[in-house]
Length: 168
Image (cartoon, rainbow, N blue to C red; front, side, top):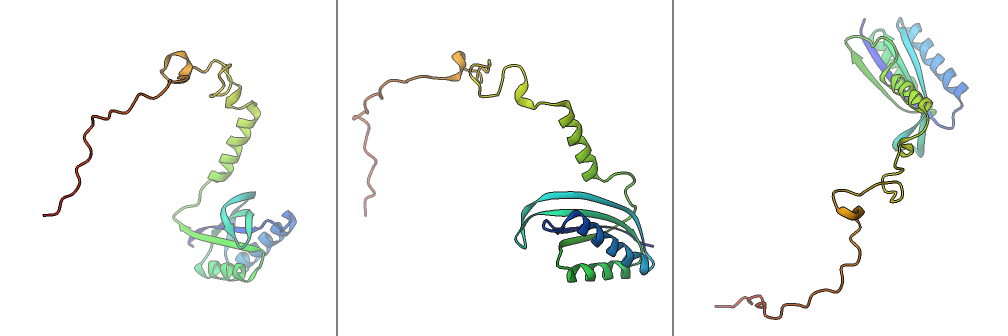
């Protein structure tokens, strides 16, 4: 049977329990039509790149499906009807990804980074623009600050005026 990756976005207003119920409803539709959900991942509430149907955030859910195309058609029909689903995308793949998806690996990596503590600004020398912290500002001597340049030099009145266009 064909393999599919299916991601749907549920409204931010929906509780986590409602999203889980929606996921079990979709899973039961898939299994009822002879398909199988190989993997289910909930990516949680994430910010959207742009507003969709007046929503700035949404619950993201990934389903790896092993089933005929009729299963996907019915799942997408159900999601079009459901008001809690903002958007969905189904992609046919040659093989399903083993282990956690890229989004889950990214979340783990971010969590590990937070465990290390701090941020780039806590390095020796302070923030990049912090004058007292030792930042010397590029390749200029004296820290990059030029100071007052003094008054402008007088205009050169001897410069020729631009030639006016003449009609012939």
